[in-house]
Length: 361
Image 1: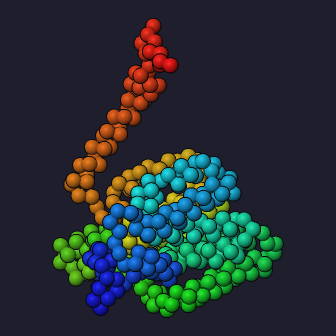
Image 2: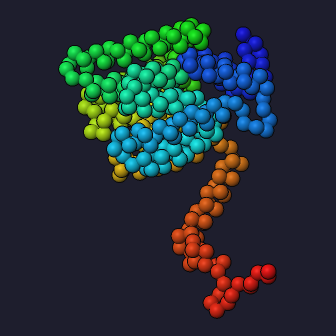
Image 3: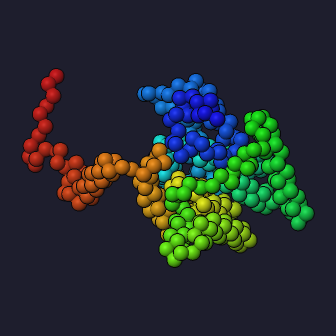
C-alpha cells in the first residue's frame, strides 16, 4: 500500500525504517495515535508543539503524580522518588521531549498501581491491562496487582481466586478494548515484528559479534547467531522474572516489578534508552536509598545523552554543541562550589565601608 494512503503528509515525516514495518504495538496505542492524527487534522504544526507532545506530557504528569503516592505506600521518601523518577533526564528529554508512547504506558501503569495499593485493586487490574495494551511488557504489572490484592485475603483458596479474578479482568478488558478500537486481533501477530538489524540491545550486539566471527571462520551458522542470542535473552528474561517473583525482595511487589521490567528492557531483542524507564520508574518509588538509587541516577544521566529525543544518534554539530554546553555547565558548577564569594553573591555586594547610593524620593 502506498504510504500516502495510510497517513498523508504525516506518514512522509516518519523515518524510512518504519514506513514499511508492521506496527508492533497494541490496540490502546493504536487508538491513541489515531486520536492524535485526527486532532492534528493531518497538518504538521510548524511552531506549536504537536498534539502527541501534549498527550505524552499529560501521561508524564500522571507518572509524576503517582510517584509520591507509591513511594509513601512503599515506605520510601516521596521527595527522593520525585527527584529520581519525575526529574529523570530520560523522562524529560525522551518521554516529554520525544513524545514517545512509553509515557502513555507508564502513566496508565502508575495510575493502576496507585489504585491497586489503595482500595481499588480491580480498577488497578483494568488500568494495568490498558497499559499493557499500549506496550506489552506492562502486563507484568498484573503480577503486582494480584500480589497486592492477595495480601488482603485470608486462606489459600481466596488468594488463588484473586489471581484468577485478575486474569479474568485482564482478558475482559483486552476484549473490550480491542472491540472498541476496532483493530481486530492482528496486533498480536505484529508483536513479533523483528528488531532492526542495527539495534544496540545487548543480545543484538552479541549476535552481530558472534555472526561476524562465524562468518570469518567460514561457518554457515553465521545467520543464526543473532536469532540464537535473542532466544537466549528471552530465556534469561523469563528466568530473571521467575526468580524475582518466587523470591520477592523485601521492598515488596512494586520493587519486584521494577526489577522485572528492567530485565525485560536490558535482555530483550530491542532497546532504546527510554525503555529503561519501564523499571526505573518503579525503582524510583520503591528502592531503598543507597547504591541502587545512585546507580540509577548515573545510568539515567549517561543514557539520556546517548540518543536524541528523535530516537537517532547525534551528528557532529549536535555533539559539538553538547560538549560546549556541558563544559560551560561544569565551569558554572565549579565556580559555585569553589570560587570565593560566587555562590553567596559577594561579588555583587558593596566594598567594606562603601554604601549603595540612596534612591531619590
